[in-house]
Amino acid sequence: MSITLTDQDKATLRTAAYGAVSLLAAAGAAGSPHKIATQGSIALASATGLVGHVLAAKSRDINLYGKSVAEIADQVLPALTAAMSLLKKQDPAEADNFRRTVIVAIEAAARAHQGQPSPTIADMTRKITEALDLAATPAMTTADSTAAPKAAAGQDRPELQKAIQEIVESGFVGVSLRVHDERGEWVGSAGVAELGGTAKPPTNGHVRIGSVTKTFIATLVLQLVAEGKIELDTPADDYLPEFGLDRRITVRMLLQHTSGVFNFTGELYEDGTFAPGITWSGQGWVDNRFKTYRPQELVRLALSKPARFEPGTDWSYSNTNYVLARLLIEKVTGRSVAEEMQRLILGPLGLSGTVVPTTQTEIPEPHAHAYYRYEEDGRQQTADVTHQDPSWISSGGDMISTTQDLHTFISALVGGKLLPAPLLAEMCTPETKVGYGLGVFVQETECGGTLITHNGGHGGHAGLMYSTPDGRTTLTASLNYVDDAALSMGEAFQKATQRLVNEVFCGGRARSADEAAEPAQ
Image (cartoon, rainbow, N blue to C red; front, top):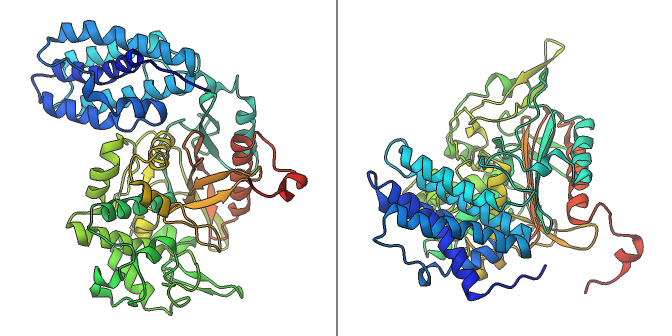
């Protein structure tokens, strides 16, 4: 959809967005107005697409300094309604994007207040949200920014509700799906949050995202490359000499899984043989799921095993690569990976639902439950493994997030908000064996498009994250299920994700044989 904004329209958007933050800062004067305004402004930087482009030029139009709370409110609240109205008329998806961006910003600003938000801040937050909702589209939410849109009931996108229901019927306990495309945002869930219960999985609940963690870690490394602290083609041994790594292994090889370093969770070879690593499945894992591992311990275990191949000569997925990347981040910055993630990604994007748990066993509410099936004394047992010490996988897959945060993250990433264009291009340039870039898979859809993606799952939780290269269409999802040592849900997981991808990115159809035979344009 083509959208045209006059200079006055752009000024209205900027006044509305940054004015909302200024309003909260002024209302919270008893705390730290500068901190409140700063946190809110940082969160506005998460805006993508047209809205992000307009807000990037904020300083030229905003003139609210020195005004009272009442004066700012008189200017800002009507601007919020006007901004929503003009975007809604031209592109409801952009109106939705603007609304969510402002909500994230005022939530970040409110959190920055010293102590609990004051009644004045709470009242201003309510007024700002009401102004946004006054011109809201039918697909948008009410004042609760975490609630599902009305479309979540599946009334206007029955094909999406049907797709997630089919996933549940294939054997999953529950699934939550979030789609952003030219029709706006759709959020829905199916199945149950807990075995034996009746409540659906929360539509924006927390989930252990497994290997989607790798995209966050790779982005963090590349941000440090942009800061001049790391060089991609320098031997990793230069940064981590304590491990005696093969000098041919570069930082790039760690991020692209071409180092050949043994996978500490075990290696399955082409001839079908399996070389075990740490205990990460079966009753042994269930009984010891609260055991704490140090990342150095995982690396040293991997390095005690033969390399899978000579560095740079092949590709093989290895969690060890990303634990080394984590240690590299911590070595060059002198800070924990959680602190650096907060500084460079979570804070700037306002990802309040995303956690780098390290050894933390809890998962924030709300969340669906995860399960693991194993054999004990010849009998099958099913354990609730929602709570566990994720240090066993470390930065190979320990993070927790939400479908909303994953959407914000992947949109910002492919939209150039996190990396300079040359580094983003390198990240999205795949190797030839399986199409793995630097922390992302670059895949072709069955209808001929390209996707930037990474999925992950283990122990009954899984996260999905897909985006078109321009960020205009995204799919993020969370699943909860009963896992086991045989990974018996693996085939169902692959079929389920492909079903969703086809529905969202191909309109429910795969490319025909005739189309597949045509050369790409």
